Image (cartoon, rainbow, N blue to C red; front, side, top):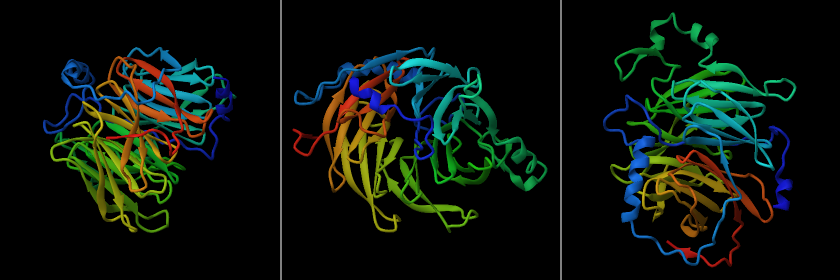
Length: 409
């Protein structure tokens, strides 16, 4: 598209931080009660798709991918936008940097550092979460030959040395081993960035808070009764939402405006019983929260003024199989990706309800991650999707107007 050149943005603009989360992933020592999705299990589940009745969508817009980007040796697990670059990471332990607007492979980094679960970018830094329970910090610079350079690992050596001598800094893990409270005891499944902090969610059921300025771990919260699969932070009010395999989304707010303030539980959003919530997104105004479940449902809640009470306002059967990922485009469009290989486009009503306006098909495997462009391109938006088929696909989604022929689901 000729208009794609308008999408080119400066490298890592300070004014634009992209939040990216990844949902369910795999671990050899997952609790028996945990509803998480192993990539091989998802591939095997695809045989069930033929038994699911097709939802009529004759009036939906027809989409064709602008590009199919191949190069990963493993399944694509997470995506992030980084200025003029697209970053995609995989089970193959590599992170590929794609140049826009020509969508050519620019470079690779992180090879050999372990399966990457999540990516976030802020300023001139990239944070990657790994299956080895560590977060790696990369500095982006065009002045050096190595454009993406590893500068630290969380927890940092300084943070570790400052705590390892004191016995009270150790906690008992589910494996009956002791670790410092600043360490995750299982794979880190998701990351979110907001207001100078990095938040990490793990299969160890904990939520940790890291300060970006000095990379210090400030808090460790026993957040859920099962694995945390998704995180998102409201830019407007700083509230963090964690989605878990225990079927709940929890809202965490910072107490006090000082740097020493801690996070506390503000509210609980209840999902379906015995259904894992794999992903979570929050509206731009911070009032509406949506969760994607392993039963294929999308659920939406609206919060009161203090965000300590939440009401279910939306419950829709979105996919024939588990919802694995979601993202927002602009304020009124929501995208959901599923183990059924499809992506659905939804338009949000004023009261929080969802209308399905489009279905995207093209991936040959479950859709594991989604990321939308933050700016308009040719009257629409760019959507990037990563899949277990090892590919990254690029789509253009029109900006549906109010008079679009909508089909309610």
